[in-house]
Image 1 (tube, rainbow, N blue to C red):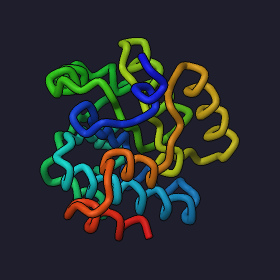
Image 2 (tube, helix red, strand yellow; image 1 turned 120 degrees about the vertical axis):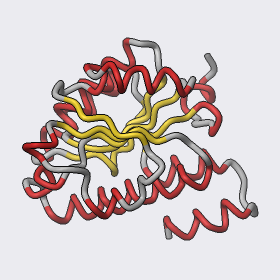
Image 3 (tube, one colour; image 1 turned 135 degrees about the vertical axis):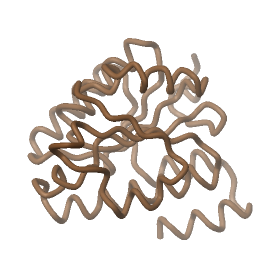
Amino acid sequence: MSIKGTFFLERDKAVLVVIDVQEKLCVAMDEAVLNVLVKNVGILLDSALELEIPVLVTEQYVKGLGGTLSELKEKTATACYYEKMTFSCCGSSDFVNALKSTGKTQVIITGMETHVCVLQTVIELREAGLDVHIVNDAIMSRSKQNWKTAIHAMTLAGAIPTCTESVVFQLLKVAGTDAFKKLSKLVR
């Protein structure tokens, strides 16, 4: 595969995955970092909706950790939700089947915690041969060191580190469209 094919996201190949941004888990996070994550995941959700990119949302042990954060739940009305007990999303056959049914080969990853559920999911998605883009400003852990370590491990596994704004503009491709006018306002 070409360098561009590896690093550039394509609308028709992409799926957005939001991992475990849940009420009770969010309480344990640094508030300033959480605010950035929620804003950026929101931008990515708005972009996915506008660009007709499928969205899969996971929730770890809802009974104990609560549902997806309400600010994001409002933006995921058309998304498919998958409850899981395994840390990796790939431990849920419903999630794996849904991902396969999209036919997409590029997976945009957001969520928490970077060093647990996100890391394990990314490793399994890479093992399955998918191109994985980890949105560093839309994933988090309670500890910055754990976040950094997991980013490094995922990169070594072949995941592409990126940021929210890069994702949005790669998916848009060109300026001047109605989608560009709408979405470019979100990252200003």
